[in-house]
Length: 339
Image (cartoon, rainbow, N blue to C red; front, side, top):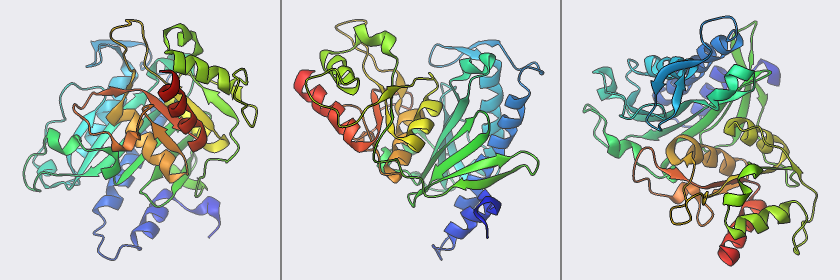
């Protein structure tokens, strides 16, 4: 079958055949996520025409003003997965509490964790945004209500992760630990078609992505590392990198996944005695780390693999360095040597 005619449903089912014991529940869960993404993509394409732009008048658990689209996308993913019997518990970046289990959810074998719209402030100015998700097997017994224990698992326990980028086209990229594959939404068919099979991060990277306006709040090690990426440090970079930064994590990660590079958001020392990370471990860092690993890359908090971190809370934040392994390991080296 020609690559462009392989639907995401067909691809998921083909991968399932490698596991004779598979029941189809996991495959259907991935397809449910794809369907929710189609609903969100449809609304984004008409965002300037419908009453979906602007602030909702509410504040999320992060203390951030919610946009109307944050609420819409969050509801879309919850409604799509609450009554299928496939998901036992859900956690959303937009909600303080876990999604209250329905009777159907008590029979679900899986945990779904998601950031419904990453970079949502970009919607109002027509810049690409994304959804990030991860799937785990639940720890609590099937037949009972899922709990926080199910969600607080290290990324290495993940069974699937992915993201959807809503831009000039809508793409869904996901991995179940057996390669990273990208699907582009064909709008006239309403189907995700395989467009980027077996994605691998290029060995020679092109870009570094970070918010350099925060340079004055970075540690000495990160400032020196940035000069290294710019070719200004005493250590010689073996290739030339260009700076690219969208400010939407999914967009920056997606570009570097396909063309090579590193994205980093280190600790900010606005308060010298209390440096703070920005990105969320469960909703952003861990799922993208899982994808990076599947594509030959690496993700770190500056000291250890993101996938090895044991979460302590569902809204825990971490520094993130993600992309080509050699660039991420070089960041770890600068942090060790210079702080």
